[in-house]
Image (tube, rainbow, N blue to C red):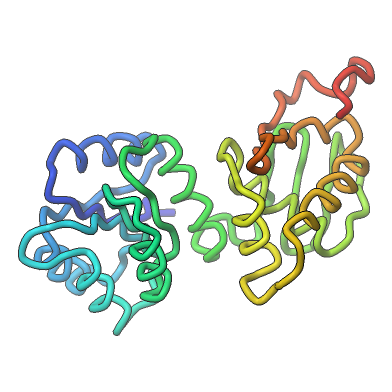
Amino acid sequence: MDSLKILVVDDEQRMRKLVRDFLVRKKFEVIEAGDGAEAIDIFFSSKDIALVILDVMMPRMDGWEVCREIRKESKVPIIMLTAKGDERDELLGFELGVDEYITKPFSPSILVARVEAILRRSGVVDNGELLKAGDIEIDKAAHQVRIDGKLVELSFKEFELLTYFVENQGIALSREKILNSVWNYDYYGDARTIDTHVKKLRAKMGDRGSCIKTIWGMGYKFEAEPEESGGKNGSSEKS
């Protein structure tokens, strides 16, 4: 399979290089644009861009206008980068169809993790393949989970929750973000439902339940354990 093309749009060359270097390590092909007008020309002449990483504040044409123009013709995943932390900007981004919104400064490795997660969710990569994290295997097509080679029976929401954790491993996830992503924005229940489902999921995962780390006052983070370690050495890892 050919390398997936990522269009990185930022008027700061240093920022483009930083993002490019991390993406190239993951075998992505990176195309750069230094302003919005150049980004539009590249995007509509390439036709095979898998994802766009787009800065907001740029000369000639800002990120919002670029997003509007792309969305007229394409549903390609878009990640917006901004130095602002204004909630109104974030809301505008989602109204325009932005898939992810990241405030500068950010961790390049986290950005790459989000790129991979978005591409998996959109079916661009790993379509029909297994997701794997340590000794945890998720078959999305068959809707099955195996831990240490054994089939684990999960409810529909437990399966979706675990899949979301694995696709976003290493990323701190707030309860609200989990709720919006797994239960969708039309769910009006209490965010504490997350805690209930995590508790049940951990119990069914046995020793591997400790991969789901609690971030007090915020939410959770999934960190896979090495395959050679884990629940085979006793019960000390249980949550």
